[in-house]
Length: 410
Ligand SMILES: Cc1cc2nc3c(=O)[nH]c(=O)nc-3n(C[C@H](O)[C@H](O)[C@H](O)COP(=O)(O)OP(=O)(O)OC[C@H]3O[C@@H](n4cnc5c(N)ncnc54)[C@H](O)[C@@H]3O)c2cc1C
Picture (cartoon, rainbow, N blue to C red):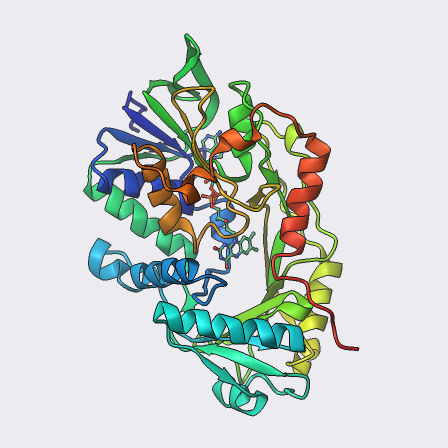
């Protein structure tokens, strides 16, 4: 078995984010990069993600970025030799209220400005596009995007790692980082269960453990693990992996086909989180299923798919992605501790967003940082003027309001 060695850059974490960061750094010409993960790459939060890739957004810039990400995942096999398992199913954003309908009309205008093909459709047309939508009586309209789809998150991670390895990145699974090593006020490497690694730069892409890992160097950052889950039903006659992805903000639910079953997930009204200051860098985060909340997702989706209440449940996916109190990523160098770079706090957007997270890290290390990337700097939380309790409450609220909350119809 190979052992760790010194490297100019060590990336801690081989989920979608760490893998993308390693790939992006290598593409940008950084050399001597090593990625370490306590387990196998993509075995933690990334393995649980639904992999939805949605392009219509509330700004032209965000829409273009999402289009670029979709194109990257579409081309991953041709470019990197590993398929992202991209499925171009199209998607329907379903409005059950006038407020959401107005929002979708505005998004359609933005999509058009960005050059993204979308169409506003009525309930009957939505049903034609997605026969599994058996009750469209409450549907005001839907925003149809034919080029949306989903990926398999593990495959995306494998693609980044293949691209990274092709460019000389060394990948070390089953290597637990116990703490960041500090010499003369800067990070000079990491201490692992396989020995010490000396590095000029350490990128902390440890997912929900990122805050705990930073704390080993005395840096307090609010990365709050919040419970996110979905279920997959037993086989149906109507749904398949080719069915359009659905998003229904009024009931905080999304859905798509998985095999011949229906995958149903969402964002609960009263979130569940872990007090971030209680986690250690080697803590086990226990798997947790909340059946009451999963039942609410089913009830929500039953507004448009009434049959769901009769379907058996095949399996549940669940995890604790890291959220931040302001809903923005935590990306870039920590200026009070040279040598430490963050790539965390993805707010349950770390698979779709992984391409740009990697690129943002590269930009944050360059001399030319855009205002958008500067706004992601961990420095905004340093020194700690916030309380752990407030940070936890705010981060949880970001998850609870993942889809903008709009009044529900009776
Ligand atoms: C049910 C569910 C559905 C989701 N659906 C979507 C979706 O549709 N689209 C989307 O974009 N996102 C989705 N997400 C969110 C997405 O999963 C995360 O944003 C993303 O996976 C975060 O990736 P990551 O690499 O930061 O974290 P992780 O995948 O958790 O990776 C962190 C890695 O760091 C390693 N690590 C941690 N500490 C150490 C240490 N001390 N030493 C060495 N290694 C360490 C871990 O072993 C792990 O492999 C979903 C999440 C869940 C739970």
